[in-house]
Image 1 (cartoon, helix red, strand yellow):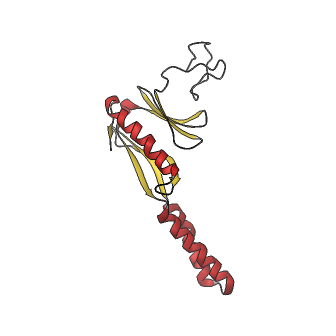
Image 2 (image 1 turned 90 degrees about the vertical axis):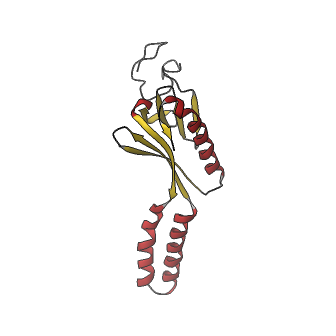
Length: 164
């Protein structure tokens, strides 16, 4: 992508030109800050997600049929529960209790927290989930994710993809 002000090339992974600071073409009209580093940018043609000032990924809205917020337990924490539980079963004394307690914490973390992601479904049936955050339901971060999603969901239908 070329900057319309200075003509600098190689700025395709940025929202602003690294040379002159000008906003690049097809700039977003909606920016949702999910976390300090994770942001979503919606323009008339694209949805992009960034970490800091660098674009991590993006998709043309014309290629999407549906966008939804995906919320699920953090199943990844269960990967720790099995080995910890096995360790608790095979050890004795204080080590057993420590490993058992850690296994319980891993199981609790799975069901107490939620992983929030943006599900992007294409016309070919291809699905991509963009990770947004891990948060406790009702926390400030969870409310921020909900707020960004509400703003995004209000704009997306007029740009093409279905919501939900």
